Image (cartoon, rainbow, N blue to C red; front, side, top):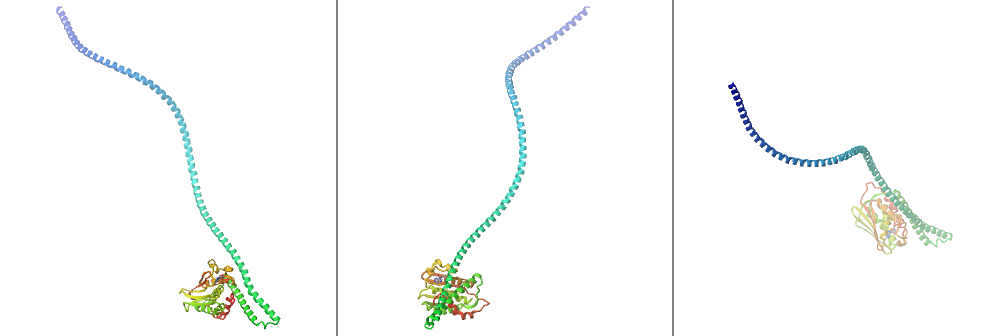
Length: 427
Ligand code: ADP
């Protein structure tokens, strides 16, 4: 029994030892654990302190956050209000946008319509442009026509004035020509009455000398009538364009010289001198010799009419190769400058008061000019009042192939021609 007990007690002691050992181990471990815990506690305390600080910080942050939250709530409310406002505004904007969209569509429609209208307008404008261009052309045409009409009207006014003047001149001419016709007729008629009286009272023989003188006067006045009638006929022919030249190739020098020679004694009997001068002996040109004689006689007749006793008439021929110049120069009363252009016009006479005692109808020089021009020539005058005049006829030096010779006839009647052409002057 004891041994078992011992064994039991020993086992229990051993077990108690073991348990103590284990408890010591445990205590050592606990000390270590305690130390660890103490350290951890310290750490935790530190941590707690830190946490307190952190807590404070957090509390502070929380306060801040609460303030911020409160602010945010206000802001939120503000935002909510603004959102509400914005929503209203958005709704309004949506309506406005819809309105704008509608207006835009309207505008787009209007724009489309405007484009069409614009195209239409452009087309109309183009049409108007074309029409305007046409109108401009039509206007130009009308302006041109108007201008032409104005010109025509101006021409008609001038022509009318000319006609009135021509009618007046013609009227004066008829009065003048009637006087010119009546004067020689009266002389012839009075002479016939005188002769009748001589016959009736049988005094013809005793008045023989005056009868001879009166017969001369009848002849002279008959020549005057003849010249007048010739001039009238020629003038009418010239105006009608039927005045013809009998052209032949003749020596113009002898034609002019012969006619001067033929009138020399008649001129000298008027107390005047006539000189013939030429720088060429022979110059054959195509001319109507009878008409050339008339030209020269007419110019000589005028020179006599407007010269004073003792004056000199010079008939001069100058050969200018391409043409020939025949001039009749006097140192008589001369012509005023203002009349120089008009003396070649029909029926124009220089103021009667200046041209003293002269017979004439004012057609002589116009016929001369027409005849010269029919020969392809020209006539001009140089004159100085009180000093005399110089008429120059310029004829081309041309010959014709087919002559129309009637020269012999003229030679026969030259004397009578001279009488007729110089009938303005009492010889
Ligand atoms: P008329 O038959 O009246 O002489 P003309 O045509 O021969 O007509 O001449 C026209 C006018 O020219 C004359 O009336 C005269 O006034 C002027 N005249 C012509 N020749 C001369 C001249 N040699 N000297 C001065 N005047 C002249």
